Image 1: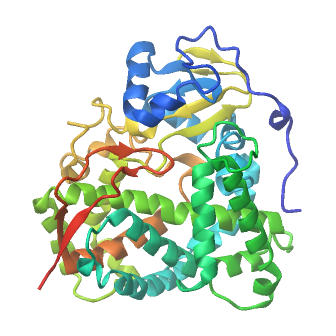
Image 2: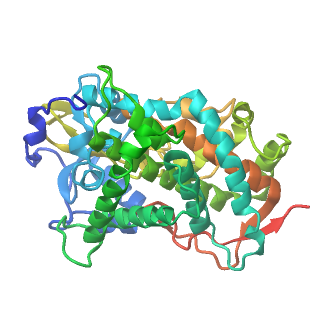
Length: 452
């Protein structure tokens, strides 16, 4: 068996009996979706300032908005096994990535995590770093010769190529890699569909077509990869055994590799884009990171070099603090419980807003400022509360690919900062979008100057 028995809570409808808790739902059907798309932080902060740490809220589904690190600690550590990620995400990510590790609960999550852990063991990571270095070098070598250079689409394509090679064994010139990219784009746009109905020409319909493409693509390769000796992650997945010696099911393998490829490049793309947004306007901090990169005097990083880039790591975390790649996290209660002094019935959707807790002045000095030194001694602001920074989640669902994401980002920055100085292009926009992927609205136009 590769899946555990379903329990009753999965069959229950969402609870909407929340009138005893203050708050507002917003517009009929959509709730506060439109205001959230326009100004996510402002919408969340207004709700918090008006109603407090726990309030009625609606994003399509009706539920509760939770604010603050103590509540996030309670939800993420989940000592009583009372918060379901599967049911929390069922109306969003679950429409396209059903069965992904993020959407597994408790014992089933622990059981399925085994297949994913094989992708991030030290030996595997050492192999990945050897693959990505030359790919990054080839991709960025002519960036300074491009007119009207926009960073976001370039880094997105580069990281997808790297992920496709490492996780699936596809070269960047393989036409299947382009089709995978389009499928992921269509799914990301489909996540914005308010009505989950497959009407022709809608974003939701295109997203479901993309999902079916992923299932057919990966499903059609499982037997071949299982018989082979490939060293990409997908091949490892097909050969991974459960505790009773059987293979994981095809559905499990497809779910895990699809979500891994989606998460591995999209979240790092967002983090790097926001980091360069700040560095392009701050030449002093840009040079601090460049000096760290120059101190590792070799064309490509080795695995042991990663620990020599602590400033780069906190720079990435600072970018994630200000602009987390995942703007809203979700769970659903399994049984009645208490949250922030309120009785919360079973089967209630709850949302957490990482960007808001990342900007609470109780935990962060001058919280809207990009400032690497807040992470360093003597300030160490991130230690004021263990859940004041949740850029990688927390608890059992903490991002299993966190170290891969940092490794990939450090590899890119080591090469990029040694080759280029950069600034914002004239007339750039400071507007940010938060959905479907957080990024500058204008895709970050920058001017590159080759060093030396």
